Structures are given as C-alpha cells and as structure tokens.
Image 1 (cartoon, rainbow, N blue to C red):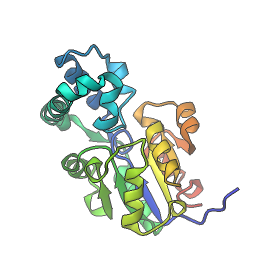
Image 2: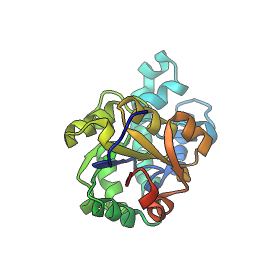
Image 3: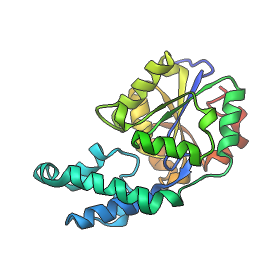
Image 4: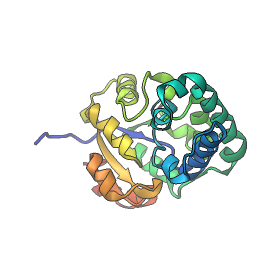
Length: 225
C-alpha cells in the first residue's frame, strides 16, 4: 500500500461541492437540449453535471449533430445559465470556514472546475472565498474536461507538486476519476446529489455529507492525514 504524507494542497471542485448549483446547471442544459430538438430529461442532464460541455454534449448528440449545432447549443446554454440561473446560486454552509481551516492547516488551496473561467471568477465571489484561493483552473485551461485528468495535471503543475501531495474534494464520480488518473486522492461530498456508493466506486477514499461535515471532522480527514 502506498504511503502518503500530510498533503500540501487541497484541490476543490466548485459546482455541487462548494456551491449549490447542480440543479440549476441541469435545468439550463435541459432547456438548451430541448431548444435544439433533443428530448433530454432533467434527470438525464443532471447525471452528467460535473463534466464540461466537451464531455456532456456527446452523451446526447451524434457526431453530425455536434458539428451542426453543438457549439451554438453550448453558447446558448451559457447565456441562459448566466441570465436565469447564476443569480440563484448560493454556497453551501460553512464554505469560507472550511477553506480557512484548510489554510490554517498549512495547505495551499486550488480550484479545479469544469466551468468556464468567467463563471469560476463569479463563483468564487458568490462563495466569498476569493481571498482564500491560491490558484484557479477552468475548462478554458485544458483540452479535455473531467473525467479526463487534464485539469488536475494543470493544477499540480501550477502548484509544483506531485499528485500524492494533494487531496481533491468533489461531488461527482467525474471528479474522482479525473483526480485518480492524476494520482490525487479524492474526498467526496454528497451535496451534489450522487450517492456514497457511486462516489466510492469512482475512487473516493472518504465521503462526507457536505462542506460543513468535512469541517467538523477535519482533523480525522485526509486533509490532515
């Protein structure tokens, strides 16, 4: 079994991990799919949240459909989300306190999100953690979004550390899969809607109900051990 030192960095996802936004994203994607002629249910759209558009759209559109209107669909979705749903996004409880506790423990804090850069910037402001984050990465920084490992590889390069020196915190199997491919252990949270079984099957070493529970059990978590 591989030995791990106390981590030097925590890599957080945003949607569904620090922010209560998964349902809102799912509604925007469902509306976009229906507008462009694709019969996609809310549940189907929701099951794919956590991926970037490059991974989500091919689940529902054929290659020909992607070439024909995939980019237009994604752009419409982005505008719809910003105008109708972004104002409704709220952070989960204890998010700033959790990140402060992580910093007090001596860890650097990074954001690894499948969202676009402009969305990430707004999210950090909504979560009231702008001054607590050392580096951010978004889907704009990589060729492929989660569950590909690209975003974690970029984070590790920016932090100048190896995967074994970091812990990822995410709410979807895609977070755990992407992190695992980059050699990063993952702590899962249930507040994004996936089950503990789904998260552990994808590779999460620990699972907590949400940020507040992780804060309450911080000293016993992978972030301290």
